[in-house]
Length: 288
Image (cartoon, rainbow, N blue to C red):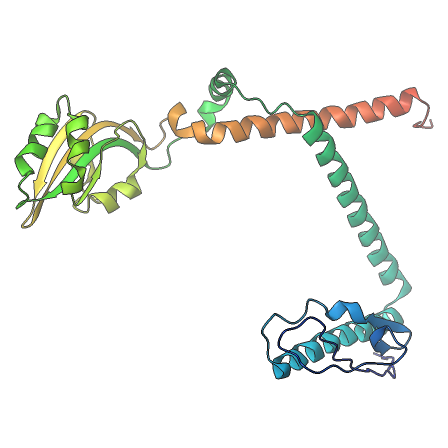
């Protein structure tokens, strides 16, 4: 392939104005640029934010040279491409650029319209209504669990208090256990939250994918004691793979879903209105 070789000159201007690391300056008399490739010039102001504060003079010069060389290489490659690519290829690229620009302009304009018009107030009733519409499409991937547990050293002087706080899993005394939380190695005392089973494996290391059915059952209480500590565990509810995800689990994401749904509907309406208005004003016609 024939390549156009372009003669060029690059004149370096190490103008490091404002850089605390630099004590020397070089000036190019009567010029506002620091480099040239044919009829393209690199402006002096482009160096202002190249060098980080506190850089040494040596490092500053190296960074400026690298920046200028990259700029020059880019200009040379663009010139070579313009000379060597076919007209068809260049037209194809021009069309891609034009389409990309129009997409960006449209996207920016529509986003502005949506931000100005979309209703961002999401009530609890909106969330519940939307959940009822989409819930069958959201299923448990593996297993979700509601539980409370405590892990406490067997030698801890509050061991019996903690054990009585669980009371065999019936009417767990959460207020008492919360007061004793500093005595515990680890704990979860809010059994109203759904926890992914993978987190259960981390919190309760004696449970794994092979034996979980033995432990993870609705309304179950058990104790697991090892050489140093004891786990007191209360399982209140379990959802298995394929069950519908509960509202409380999806709730943090529902508001975003509702807002996104409103934005999509608004975008559709805007596009329909623009087309309708253009036809009404005779700005848009389809010729038969």
